[in-house]
Length: 473
Ligand SMILES: Cc1cc2nc3c(=O)[nH]c(=O)nc-3n(C[C@H](O)[C@H](O)[C@H](O)COP(=O)(O)OP(=O)(O)OC[C@H]3O[C@@H](n4cnc5c(N)ncnc54)[C@H](O)[C@@H]3O)c2cc1C
Ligand SMILES: NC(=O)c1ccc[n+]([C@@H]2O[C@H](COP(=O)([O-])OP(=O)(O)OC[C@H]3O[C@@H](n4cnc5c(N)ncnc54)[C@H](O)[C@@H]3O)[C@@H](O)[C@H]2O)c1
Image (cartoon, rainbow, N blue to C red):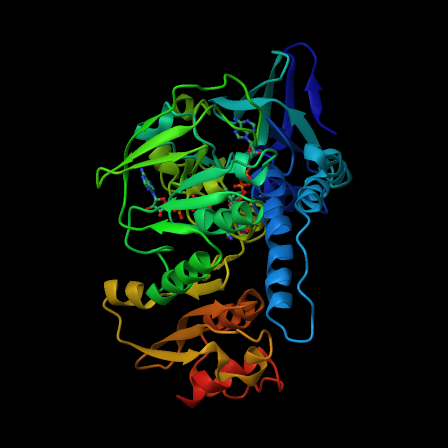
């Protein structure tokens, strides 16, 4: 597949992608598909990346049964289902293939991509050095392009580092459930992990420095998710920060999902103390650029922020996925991977580079209730001084939504441009709203106005009829 220069020990590929997560896989695939070009996908751990083994997939395997159980428990006519914790973790293990990536490697091979095991770093123009797990060093040279797709790593606040807290891999890969768990942060990771850790038997306290959960979304989303978590038994300490953490007994190498030591005492900024058996950090992520050799090509980590190509990046270098921080979501990394790969292919074939019009970012938080959002929030519209109208309705104003569960509730907001009546953003909060989102994403991406949306008649009795209520406003 690749050309090996046996004298210099250098392997030459058309395209080298460092990082084999969802974003990198798509970039490699789109750069060479349907051609005789060659690609190397350099991966330090498991091909498939964070999403497949330690993030979206294990989270959803744990959360989906909880959604179904909650719905069943709130539907008259059904008896209450019993949660089998062992079976829940077994479902997770099955979906993460027991942390083996053979099926991903075989996908890559079938797509004509070479998997190169080891940690890659830039050592010069179009040149990557890969150190394999047993210490062998290989040099790869790219004829056309290098793509950086190394993802992100958790942010560990200084106040908590010495207590060796859990990070997200421990939560999604949980093996031993701590009796008392503190979760630090109020973003999507915190809101989702609080649910499954509670269901698995932990007594969970969320310590959130802001006054609301999910602070980047509409205010009503964070408020309704907070109510949902409280009703599941989670204790919320909003407007609270950790000032110090004490853990006298720390285990040197406990393995993922097992306690990292003995009890931890957190001192909070109101002077109170909280003793727990484990602390889970959900304090955000930063680009994985450590040891990537950016300096060898005259770049700093900040040069990658929000950028897939161009600007300070040399023409042969691109980024995709979490590393550029545009939106830390798998589908966004894959979208960037398709675009960057398509661009490399077009340049290689002398075709015009496909246009890259801006697209709205959709996101779903799999909390209870779920939160699904796309485009602008009302706060963002205000910050941008845009003249907008807000269309607000209860989710259950549609009969189909009320039929989903006896206790159905929720809220929906459209952000509409005051002058053109074009939809700029949408937020849905309620049971199963994840599947409502794509209609809104299409409306925002296509720049549809309210008059056009009125031509899209929802079926009766579905939850989609909430669109009728919004448009009647
Ligand atoms: C708990 C949790 C739940 C999430 N749930 C969702 C969700 O439901 N939906 C959603 O859209 N997003 C979700 N996300 C976000 C999503 O996981 C990321 O956006 C996505 O994994 C990013 O993909 P990526 O390919 O950019 O990076 P990654 O998936 O992190 O892949 C990067 C790869 O690069 C490798 N690597 C790193 N450095 C090197 C190097 N120097 N050499 C070789 N290889 C290297 C890594 O081993 C890794 O395999 C979640 C995140 C977390 C933490
Ligand atoms: N369903 C999904 O799509 C999904 C699920 C989980 C994660 N993700 C993605 O993963 C990324 C990471 O999620 P996240 O929830 O960790 O990050 P986040 O940045 O969304 O939230 C971080 C939270 O931690 C708090 N925080 C930050 N630093 C702190 C500190 N030093 N002390 C106390 N609190 C602090 C913030 O105020 C915020 O509440 C997100 O960008 C998200 O898009 C997506």
